[in-house]
Length: 261
Image 1: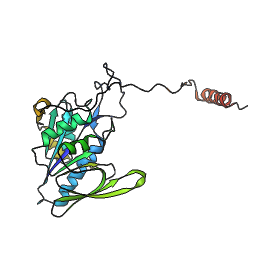
Image 2: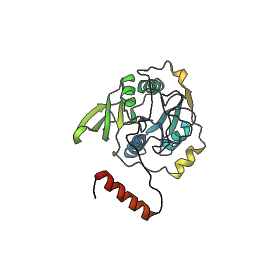
Image 3: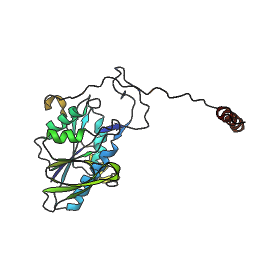
Image 4: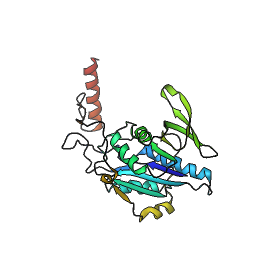
């Protein structure tokens, strides 16, 4: 069985984001990146499928990401969780690309690899659109289930049964024939820490890369017009001095503003 896991290098949420000079995306220079949190659940689910099938299952896991050379660090972290292979689509413009463009790149690479199951995180931490997975499924003509919180593989490995998270606490149970694509919601499992043996295995490994240009034309469905930080909703005043003076000033400010005497 062959499983593909799509991972993204996402900036740390606590990063100091700045708008780039073009005014249409955030500035990546100076940001620290990590494996997109939702993709960790997808990676863990792939490893658990292999563990459930046992040593005779012959499950091969490949993690794929699109981005510049720095993405290799996140690919290796994902591989440290148990993936057999890693592949980077060399695309310096991957982060600002729209969902269809990324899906078309991933589909162009995966179309002849005969994957039985493709797992994606339900969304990315930075953009939170949840579109790449379904668009990738459409590009590959695969059945798709999104926001999956439970996944079971049939004994004959020809179908999967998924439980999906819907609005208002509702659940939906669907059955998909393989090959299929599933986007994984947080809470489906508890991602493990990378084992020392896996970390050492991938540390010196060379991650193969494929130029985005070699995968054919990139489709796109939208163009980012403007990125900006929201305008301040109000003023903030910092009180300085020793604690007693700050407390007295704070009490006086509260009395003044709520007209309490």
